[in-house]
Length: 346
Image (cartoon, rainbow, N blue to C red):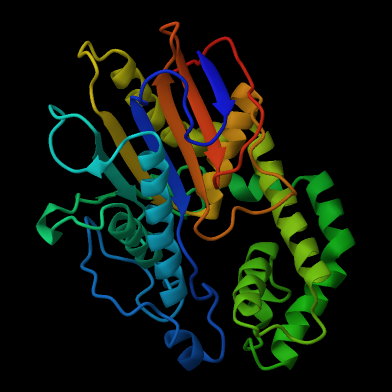
C-alpha cells in the first residue's frame, strides 16, 4: 500500500473512503482576559444543544467566534467542491446507493469543536434537512492535553528532563517580557501563580489578539514566531517519546485504520465513497501528523507552524488500476510529492 500527499485528484476510480480531520475555527482565548465583554461580543450567535456530553467552556473563553463559524462553513464548501471535481456529490443515508455518503461525524465535547463541525456540515451539505443532519459522536480521547487523557500523567516527567529545563532557561526572559506586556497593557490580570505564562498560553493569547488587532505595540510578529517555535519544541519533546506518542496517537490511529480495513475488505462492487469527519484541536492534528511522519516518512507540516484555525488533514483511501490500495494525505489542501512505503501496520 502507498501513502502519498496530493489534493483530491485520485488515480483509478472514486475513493472508497475520505477522512477529514480538522481543527476548529477561530475562537476566543481560553485564558480569561480582563475585557470579557469584548470577547463575549465575538462569540458565534447560534443555538446548540449538548451532544453526548455537556459542552465545556460555557463562559466567554474558548468559544467559537462568528469568524470561526464562517471559516468552518467555508471548509465544508471547499470540501464539497473538491468532491465535485472528481464527480461526487455528498449525501446522507444508506450505503446501498452510489455517490458519497457521510457515515461518521466525531468531535471532542467543546463548544468550539461541536459548532465547528456543524458549520462544516452546513457548507458541505447545504440542501440537507435539519432532521437529516448526521449525529455527532463525542470522543474526548481526541483531545491529548485533556487532564482526563491517559497520556496527561506523562507530561510533567517528559518536560522536566534536564535538557528540556536547560533549554527553557534560555527563553525565560522572553516569557517574562511577553507576560508583563499583557499585564502592563491591562489585557491580563496579574496572577503570581502562573507568572510567567507557559508557552501554550502565551501563544493562544497572542494569536487571538493578533487576529483582532489587539497586540501590545511592543510585541511584533517575530516575537509571536518565537513563541510558536518554543511551543512546537515542547510538542516535539513529547512526541519524540514512543510511549507518549502511542498513548496520544494510538486512539486516532486505530480509529482511522479500522475504517481503512473495513473498506478494503468490503466485497461489494463499486460501493459508495464513505466520508468521515473528525472535529478536534491543533494538538490533535499535530499528534496525527507526527504519527504519519514517524511511521511513513510523510512531512505535512511546513514552515515550523502550529496547525492554524480551520486547518484540515484529509486522508483519501482509493484503489488504483493495479488493484493496490493507496492513501493520499493533504494538509489544508497543500500539494506535494508522493512518498511510498511498503505497507501499513494496522
